[in-house]
Every structure is written in structure tokens, then in C-alpha cells.
Amino acid sequence: MLSTFFDRLFDSRFWALTLKEINQILRNKQLIFLLIFPPTIQLLIYGAALNPEVQFLKLGIVDYANSQTSRELVAAMTENRIFVPEAYLFSEQELGEEVRQGNITTGLVIPPEFDRRLANGQTAEIQVLVDGVDANTAGIASGYINQIVAQFSQRLDPSPSASMIEPEVVFLYNPGLRSSWFFVPGVLGVVLTLTSSLVSSSTVVREKDTGTLEQLLMTPAAAWEILLAKIVPLFVLLMGDVVLALGVGRLIFNLPFRGNFPIFMLLSALYVSVGIGIGIFLATISKNQRQVVLTSFFINLPLIQTSGAIAPIESMPAFFRYVSLINPLRHYVAISRGFLLKGIGVVELWQNILALGLFAALLLFLSTQQFKRQLG
Image (cartoon, rainbow, N blue to C red; front, side, top):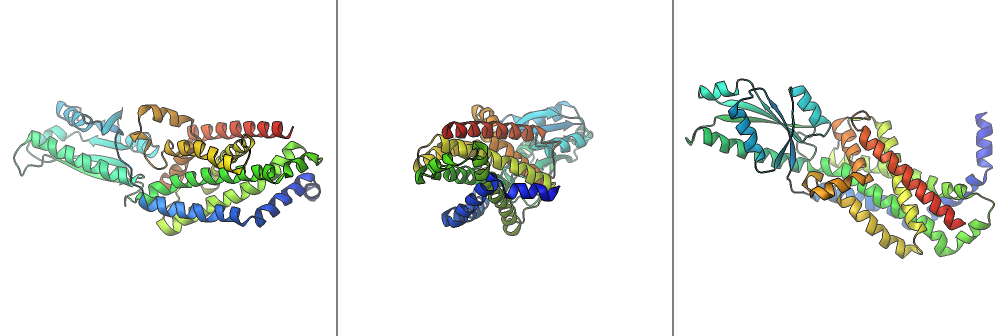
């Protein structure tokens, strides 16, 4: 039965069209260069060079003391708006899980003996949990916490040698605070966005430039066969880009991979479909290669800037934070960092996965309909 299926596949019009596309891709040295060299250089540059600013960090609070002094400490940490109180929780386990799922960036634990130790003139320790995935943000947050706690201690006891409160800062998921661990998963999404949209759009628009689109119209193949024959080889090559990026991240930056690899590749395939959908749609509304490149910059740059791949979403104005929810790249970046650095999976990231699936279905549907209309 399986051999019959393959016999029919190899004798079909779809396979003949696919072989044509593969031969065209292999003869196009510029396309092969575009698939390999720019992603590698972008990963190396972004992973080593970028440093964003920090503000509006989400703070989770576990206040076992529940006293006036502990509430004043929380107020001191949040009055400058660098930290924003996001949730009051009842246990350290809940706090750690909120950090793991990315719902909060920083966690504060005030122990029950906080006031008693202060009243006895002893140093009261507090615990601070910082999501270390974004190393730059984590380092700055730690510095701010130490400054705020030191100033609050001085208010309690103004003597120069006094240190009434001692923060114990723990960095989670990136204890070495490597900036590259934050940027490389984000740049993976940027690379897939740029490469998949540009390569797929140039492949389709090339038929217009060379005049072979009219020849395709004369073939007995259906529109879906023509389009699928173009998508499949590109899809395989772009999935190779995912593996290439992961290899660069591992070999050059020692990037960990703590999640489920097959599921991550499946979700990456979903995002590659988003990029291909964008590219085909751009090709169908453009008349030539130059126009499609200019249009892609108009689409891709806002996607990249509002995705959180380069700068934290928390640092953006409120309007752009909400706009980023309709950005498929934002959801893929969250998935990449969750799988690679935190080891979380489908259960924790189901909202991002659902959004990514909806975007993939919508964009592929729109691009397919536009392509059929163009053939018609």
C-alpha cells in the first residue's frame, strides 16, 4: 500500500513541479547564500552586541510578615515605576511558577520574622527571584533592588554602618546573566521572518519577472499543485535554517535547550508557514522583485520592533504592548525562549501556540486565495 502511494506521488504533476522548483533553487546560488550566510551573521552580531533599556518590570510579592514595615518596603520598590506590582501570592512555590511561566519578571519574598529581627536590631534577610533569561534586564533589576533596599535600610537606621535588610538575589534560568541567551532565541525568530518572507516572495515573483507564470497557466496542473510545489522545497530549506540557528547558538554561545525538541521543531514549522504566507501574499500584490523587497521592509520592520526579540516588551509604550499581541513573531519569540531556556512546553505556552496557529492558518489562506486569483 505504501509503495503504491509513492508510485502515485512520483508519477504525479505535483512531483514534477516540485522537482522543477528544487532544480531552480539549486541553480540559484544567490538564494542558497541568502539561506545560509545572513542568518549566521545576524545571530553572531545580535547575540554579542545588543543591550536594551529596562523599565516597568512585573513584580510578584510573597509577604509572610504582612506588616506596615513590609508594606513600606514594597512601596519603596514600586514607587519609581521600574517595578510594577503584578501579583500578591501566598507561597514561594507559586512565585517560582509565575516566574517560570513568564508572568512576572521579579519576585520578592519577605519572611515572617522580618519585623522581629528589625525590632531586635538584627539584619533581616529578604529573598529576590529574578528571571535571568534577559541577562541585561536581570542585572539592572538586581542593581536597582540593592539600591532601593540600601536606601530603605538607611531610613530605618541612619547610622553609616547599619545594614538592617540584606537582599538575597537568585537569578533563574540564566545564572551567568549571558545577554546572548536572551538575544539568540529572539534573533532566531527575526531570521526566520526575514528569510522566509523574502525567499518565498522572490520565488513566486520570479515567475512574473521571467514570464514563466504564463507557462504555468498553460499546464494541466491545478493552482494548489503549483503553489504547494513552490512551498514544500522552501519549507524544507527554512527548517534547515532553524537547525542551523540552534547549532550556532549551541556551539558559539553555549545556549541550552531545556524543552522538547520535536515539539519545538513542530512549532517552528508553524512559524515558517507564517513567514511563507507573508512572502506569498507580498509576491501576489507586487509587480516585480524590487517592489516586493520594499514592501517586505514595510511589513517586517514593525514585526521585529514590536516582537520583544530585541528589546523587552515591558519597555514599550502601552499602545505598542497591546499592538504586539497581533504580532506572530512575538508569540514565536516567547515560545523559543520558553522551550530553550526555561524548559516549559505546550501547557504553559498554549496561548502563544494558539495565536501562532491562527496566524498561520489566516495568512496561508489569504495568500493561497490571492495566488489563485492571480492565476485566474
